[in-house]
Image (cartoon, rainbow, N blue to C red):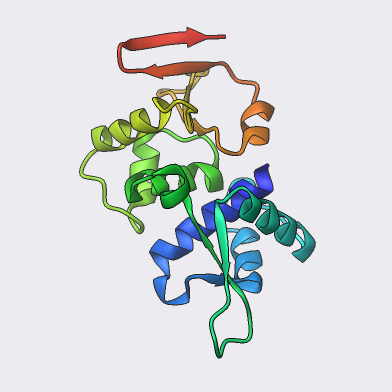
Length: 181
């Protein structure tokens, strides 16, 4: 769901930008989800929404709740690397798409800077290609819309969000580009 996608995106972002505070407590995760900057759309989740997303992600093997001796609160960490076999650059791109919606490769490169420094836009496109060429693609290339200079990429992990955006997509195929309307 979009809520689960927001939780995963926040966990990846905070792991890479504030590692000293990671894994996140429920309150820190709620604050990250409701953060007004670097989010599209901005949401106002309540504790129950985040708890439900955490529980579902844990059942899917995408999140682990950790309790450390001497700490008052349980903490949550994502398992995208283990569960889906994603590299750090791929996690970064997926998190940005989960948190900010469809973006161009150049936008992703610029916004990824704090989490991972991509050498070029082509490096971003290569990682997006790998994410799109999986048996169950995690990224789709949206058809360029009128008035847009470049096509945008969208995540497909949070399926409700991908299906809600009824834009035509272009398949990411190593043999060439195929249109799907």
